Length: 359
Image (cartoon, rainbow, N blue to C red):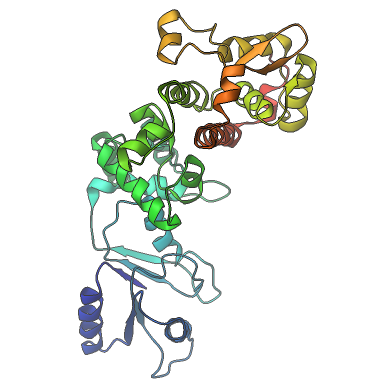
């Protein structure tokens, strides 16, 4: 299977291959479903007949959603900045087949500036943490029982590419946003990037303080949010969505659905839902953070110095001002999206045994 960038290129190459005795065909987005199925069947055929295909050239199709286990050679002629597209193309040849001993991958692009995409694509980590990616390459490991070996030359080229690349470059972040938007057909939220994006959406927060701010930069629209709501979104994104602690996130998500909760009930809730052992002291710390008492005056002011929760001896509830703000559907959606993302980010690395009996 050969992945091309343009129809003209696919046509010219298929003609050249035919002249050299290879049986080839090409398909593009305009190719009908019936014709696609027929060409794939010809490529999969084990019989040495005239109708069998040796190569199938593809333009913007077959990246995903097509299962052809017998493919034993992938040729990449399409440059891409997306780790997702890269691994989708690679994945067309990674299915096992009794007649296939190995997969051969030939990349004619030679885009060494993007070598950093190899560990991102193979390991599936989209945080773009240079330290984590270096560790992946150094240890030669993949999730599960698989392993991958990088030669010294390849390893050094990946490290060099990592050193040169700026993952927070606005152009790259905006391209990533537009890629997911085009897949969805509408503006994405943070959770959409976990399913469809080639970058962790926390990179947008690192660059613009909140996902809302980044979206207004990359894809401006007329918003209903006021300055106080924007500051609170920066607080939630910068202080809570980093995945460092789950309790603040879980408490806000609970209170957005229920009226109130007392400390013992919240401790039990954390144990039941997340198997996370917490304590009254930790809950008091959580209330301090969400009530803005934890922060110095200057830091509290930059977030609007407005408590998100109130607590007394009996219970914890949302503050009246924050609760009223949540009546704005647009604000609610950004808060809920950021908190849902934060929960998933924490749970992705969370191991219950690591947190047991330590609080």
